[in-house]
Each structure stands twice: as C-alpha cells, then as structure tokens.
Length: 131
Image 1 (cartoon, rainbow, N blue to C red):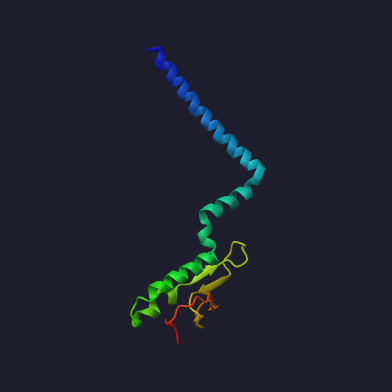
Image 2 (cartoon, one colour):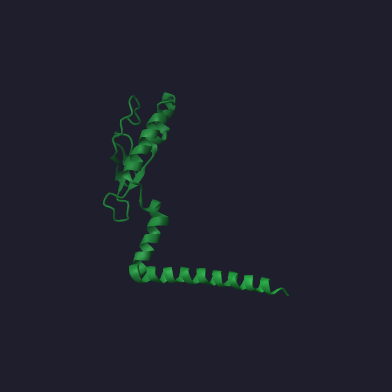
C-alpha cells in the first residue's frame, strides 16, 4: 500500500467529521439562542408563508396585471377573467391568519360562503365584471 494515499484519506475523513461537528454546533447554538418555538416559527415563515395569506401589495400588483390582461379580451369573456374572479386571502393584522378576502373589482358582490368581499378598488376602465 502506498502510505501517501492512506494519509490523504485520513485528512479527508477528518475534514468531513469537522464539517459535521460545525453543523451540529451551529444547530445547538441556534436552538439555545432562539429556543425551539422560535426556530419552528422561523422555519414556518420561510417555507409556509404562502399558506397564511397574500401580501396586500403583491395582490394589488396582481390586480393591475389582471387588468392589463382583461382589457385585451372580448367583452363576452371579461366576466370570467382573473380580474373579475380571483380572490385574495389577506392577513390584515400580521398574526399568521388570513382574516379578509379581497377582490380586484370595485363591484359589490357576495361570496356564498364567506359573506361580502373587501375590494382593492383597482380601477380597470372600461371593464365591468358584475352588474
């Protein structure tokens, strides 16, 4: 056997073990600094933020894009467009739960399940979705 190869594999093993030890230490320090609940809430925020609702500014921008799209449609197809039908669940008070359902259109209409929608009132003349 070549002694030089044995020495190289030993140093590679040492490097791998050192990396694993560093990862474990970082995890332990994170756990002790932020606690388990803080860690889980941060993980939920990173991976599951879209399940709690849509950000208002993103929803309003989506409504503006939907308006641009609906103006290119024939009159008969406009009422079924996303500008007229898309609902946005929004977390109004940043507590992790979507309290309100918003729509893009300014028309007054009701959801059969949740009652009256709130509107972002994004103008989109001459499109009329309802009524």
